[in-house]
Image (cartoon, rainbow, N blue to C red; front, side):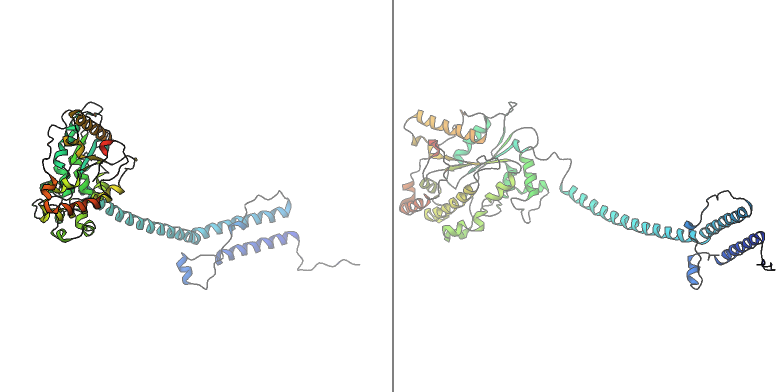
Length: 452
């Protein structure tokens, strides 16, 4: 078989290499022409018919080819040059167009972050303004430079609790004398105040000058448990001076007359004269005159150790003490009966404090009277035991008091003679009261056991 003759279209290897090089050159030129980007993304968007030939950088390599010889090496070198030129095309694309896109994306993100931060800044500024306003309001209410009330364990309120006619004026000097015998752990005498104007202003509503001094308005008078009022009253009666303060209060239940000039929050009511015992005991006026006991104890216990010394005098003597009040013994007895109901309710619900310590103790006043004892020694022994019992109850270190009964005066009234024709009616009231009064404390001390 004869070999096929060569023709004009046949190409040797060198001519093929030249042809391949030309094709590569044309490809590069066409790529450059077709891939000229718009100046920015907006111009590209404005000409949607134009295609952008984006070159994926992952397809471009800069690897060094393995060593070759001859024409194959020329072809390989041409391919490398083409790859380098393609890299230049991609770099040009990023610089002219792709860079704009990336920059616009970054600028968009930064713009969003800036707007968010500006929003947060405005919010924080508004919150700061609110906090500054609240702080200014608090500073108007609280003087941070003031020392404030003294410690609770340095402030004690002892309330002599009893109805009208139960011998408040006779017992108060006994308690005051016992308090003045006390000293603290440093042998500093107690500061004793039997007529605390600040406390009377706070719980009774008296002494308008104190309200003016405190900058507290009286139209209307703040309630007895108003937090701001209570704190300022506590600071006045028990300043933070390191001393142990004993405040004695002894307003009776009820107190004063209907037309009393003293500015009680709630005065004695004329309507009580015609009301039943239950109606009086359940009325809002009676439960707030002279004070609201639960509200008083709840509010002032935050700043003081509040104790109640409940005094009981035989009922007939109690009524005979003010028999002419409230139009006469029978009506007066009915009102006193209603208040014994109120006191019994309070004492039954408030027996112990948060530390399980008793908050009230009973004193049978007749035990302190010479009429109840046959000899002076018996009288002295009974009085000494009452004083010791009281000191222990109040947490006072000294249980002896030589001057406690210096101002004691025996009553000379005969209840039967004073009550006259109303005696039997008042006896009927007394018998009804045996169910609730005096309150039972479960103490075996003979001096603490007394009947109505």
